[in-house]
Length: 490
Image 1: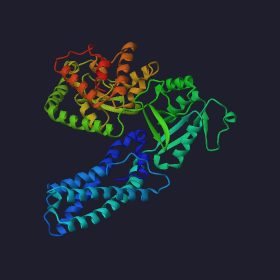
Image 2: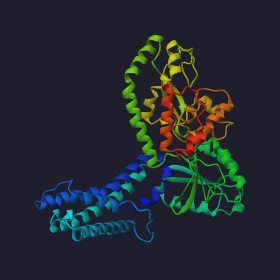
Image 3: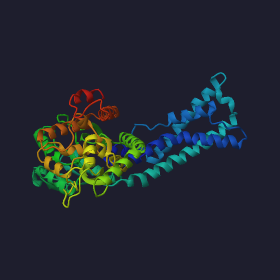
Image 4: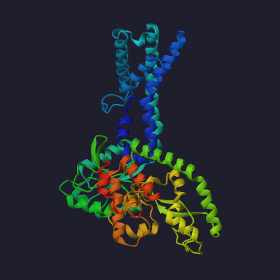
């Protein structure tokens, strides 16, 4: 169905990744609705005239395919001079006339045409009824998008680093379009307000050196870097300062001289931006990964449930205390989550805050640790959405707070949900470590995963993990070349 104003919204879906599942549902409805309406109308019209309706007949199949093909969403932007509803209805008429033209050609010019299974008066009535149905559906879907879907998103806070014409124009566009759900708090720039001669609607929040601290204290979601291209050093310094945050960073305009995470170009209300640090799981990518997680985690829990019951009984009999141990970790966007594992240690009165019950290992616990079976309850975390099958290892909060201070890019690994396994784990970089070099190697592998993610890379990591679990590869495994493995998945 035609997009209308929703086209502008789709172009910024990377900024609104939390609701990518809703975007996918609306996209699927938009793509399938014309074919559903055309076939349903065909069914009602055939019954009205007393004709037999066979959904598998060639005529019905041709109608469904043409309706689906001709009504695929267009990438062409709507002219701002044409009202959204007028544009939507005009697009429906143009596409529907194209479908009818192809059907008329097949009916008249193709010898033995399968469309002649139905008389002409059925097609005539059907074409009129379907036109009305498509127009009504187009206006209804457009209203649903405007009133419900867009407002289902949590608003995101943003700032602009650098007071420039491009940054100011972007801020004004976002302010004039509240449906974008992005609130720009203000600007940061090293020049004084007198030199800037800033407009009255431009709120100067501080200097560039204050950006990182502001983002941490105000939980800012999006940063638009609007510094001039010639000011490369300021941009590099700002990027270094922001490595200890989970904010999404966009450069306005072009900037290609930096190490970026999931770089891609986009535009917001006609203003070009380049993603410099973003999650790879946006739009249908995120939906595909989430569905894969749910399906395989549910299947895994079903298969290992007898084993988990046996382990639970063994843990209960090995020492007093709960079977499942809850641990605090950092998850997606650095937010605190609770993960589940089988208890492997004896209870102590005062365990670590993010690792309670950190007493000596039990005999059963030692075996669970060595075989990695203590992590089977993590599949429940995957179903909950707190974790993924593949991703960076979920470190303890104390470890994260320790290493984020001096390992650049450490917090960027939390741009995605932590995983049961990952590129770092299959290369032997797993478990608790006090060695900064080991942690740096782990972070480097996690960032490689974010830079080069693809569904094929996830499959490779899962296959290697299964091979390690069944003894074909003995962890720690450092013989895999992560660069070669990542490159081959692109």
